[in-house]
Amino acid sequence: VTTPDDAPRPRRRALEDSLLRGGVRGIALVTLATLGLAAVAAVIALVVSLLY
Amino acid sequence: MLFRPAAEDFQIIGRFTGQVVYGLAAVLLGMALLAAWLDGPNEALAFLIGASVAGIGGALSQIALPAPRRLNPSQGLATVAVVWTVAPVFGAIPLLLSGHYAGPLDAYFEAVSGFATIGLTLVNDLDHLPASMNLWRHLMHLLGGQGIILVVLTIFATAGGAVGTLYTGEGRAERVLPNIVQTARFILRVLALYAAIGLPLLWLALRLHAGMGARASLFHALNLFATTFHTAGFAPMSASAGFYRSSAVQAVLLVLMVAGAFSFALHYQLWLGRRRELTRNLEARTFALTLLAVFSVLTFGLARSGTYTGGTELFSIGLFHAISAHTTTGLALVPGRLFVTDWGVLAPAMLVTAMALGGMAGSTAGGIKAIRIGLLGKGLAREVRRVLLPDQAVLVQSYHMTTRRIVRDADIRGAATILLLFFILYLGGGMIGLYYGYELQLALFESTAAAATGGLSVGVLRPALETPMKVLLIVQMLVGRLEFVAVFALGGYLYSIVRGRV
Image 1 (tube, rainbow over the protein chains, first blue to last red):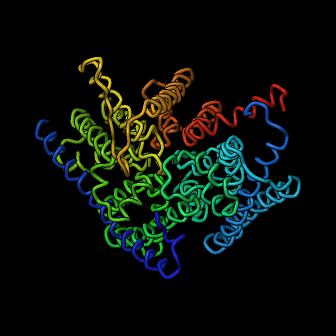
Image 2 (image 1 turned 60 degrees about the vertical axis):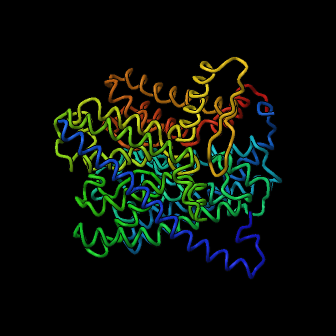
Image 3 (image 1 turned 180 degrees about the vertical axis):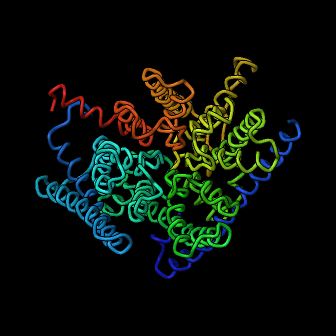
């Protein structure tokens, strides 16, 4: 695995930039995952409220 | 070798522990300056005394003990356990001097709860605690969550093998990158980026939706970020997250709690753009599945209790507490006592279950961990298939976690062992609670909250709690946080002292 720390210096910056962009994307994915869980939970809560 | 340690082993453990205490002294010194600005000379003096004691302790260890050459595995594990036990002693000093704690044990309890990212509290009159003391409580979450060990990793960056030894002792089994220092740097990068995005969002939600002032919003955002991203549980106000009465604040907190419960290995995969890891990763799948299962039963319980019947209430109250418990964060929207007085039996039982299960390995979450539950589920499925298939059939079962992996008997055995140990810890604490006259439901709730680093409380924990119960909860918090192995190593050393084998 090539990482920013063991890459040659010119590539290090590029890798770190891509990791930063990836970080924003990663946070977006975690947010989406939470929203996905919340959406399923909303359906479950709706069903339960209708049952009671 | 574990049970025949030499005096040199203890010197090495003491020396490394001293270095961490040195670092803690520097942090306390910084807090003294902040306290002078935020609160005044009394609070500054409290931190200064804490910094001085820690500084002297750290200096003595460096002077008296020889420079260590290299940590072996058992020394590393024991050092981790000693650090997590000793650091709260120094962290507790300013808390004790604040006058908001009934005594030294209560202040130590609070510091252990802080460094171990538990969130159980024994503070008196939290709503009037000086701002610097409140910040310190949450800073302990940050230090403990990102790891006192992470500090150690950066301090010992040149120590080679010793770093790896400490790292594996913290219960973060999954290495993110091949090199441990790179892994530590990545963990700090994740923290920095989440802080860069999460703090402004929290500030905006508190300012615009919860109606707080600009400075108060910043103070609460800092504290709430530290507590949620490290799946900890202290809150700046006694009403916990319920204080803000804001769905926007709750939404940001939910994302941060989930992010905190994700393993750093999974974060790394997502940062590399491997989005399918979210749906294929055994640990992520297990976490989502158990969370939704817990939420489903929890909402049934809430609806059955009659306290909440509308779909919106069931969704918002149920989801926040299910995620808070499952990620072992411990923030609440309602006073903890209501869990047992107004929520019936099923809903609080689900909170206990969620805390017991916990988040993902390689995160700051505690509990049994999703990977172990997932592996045990795979093992169970394999045994069922073995019964159904002919004797000659060769069963090879795999799972995805970064790459495709084969389910090995050793993995299942390891997961089952930790599962059993956690059950003993949860139930053992519950039994002792019963001995002191608490109802089973209350005793088990509190015991699980401590051992799984859950942090929710039904009110058994209070300054007037019996001293042996406080000590028991401290032990549970430490054992649960260190996932047994480091505590066992320390136990081995202590046993050797008792038996005179040093």
